[in-house]
Length: 316
Image (cartoon, rainbow, N blue to C red; front, side, top):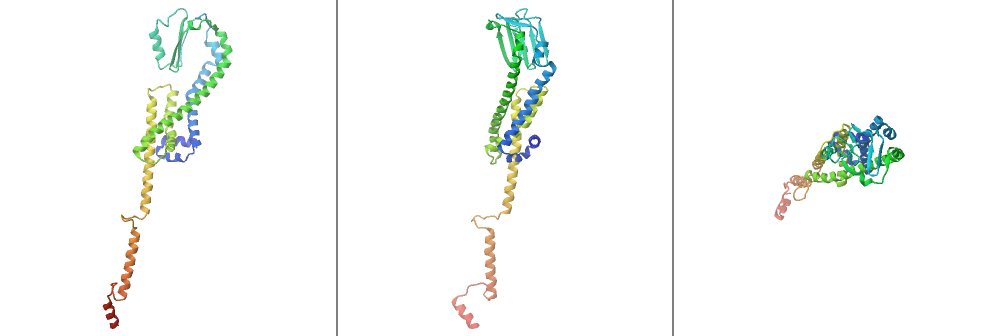
């Protein structure tokens, strides 16, 4: 049923009426599974692909991280390390202090939307970027902390655990963010319903909003797979979902009007005085029968006065 609902949610907003019969747990399950598919393809798959290219964390440390040491507020590493691939940029040269002197160049690299991860360092300063979050580290503030490459091996099991827990928390956060976005979209849906008309409750609008988010989320997933970022995509995403709700509400209103029109055609029409036309027809039919009875009696349905009745009796 989930995949059938997925197909209808994308291609047939005019058939969203079928979703109004879904129970609350079915709607929630649909949203959770939708986020699960997005999270696996957009976040987990790139991490798995990265580990297949470079190995696990221990192999990554052994092969790609040179000997380094942080001691007495200074950072030392030999030789110079440079990496620019897979949207990762690393430039470490501790032979001199150059990060502060080339701050404009460093900021241009940090602000480049292509790079997801950036590490730029000399013996005194380090600039780090992770998912658009930029930080600067002055090693003088870490005076007294001694740390080297050999110390990394002790943290690898902890790093694996932290990454696993981090991914779980990230997924739960995406679920919460998804349903909060549905709440915002439902408020927009209320405005659309007021303009179109209808008697949908807020709960029904919230239900339809979950399915209306399907196509924007699939587009976002595809953009993440091909590493394309569109500025203000969240606005486009809301506009697409609102368009789906608009089409669904219009179709529901049309079907309701057709049902009401069909009922009106099958129910007798009441005139202004509140009498049924059928009762008027019955009254006319009774009056006609009384007229026919009068004709049989020779009076043509007219009332006779007392003298006329006497005269009539004498004639008889």
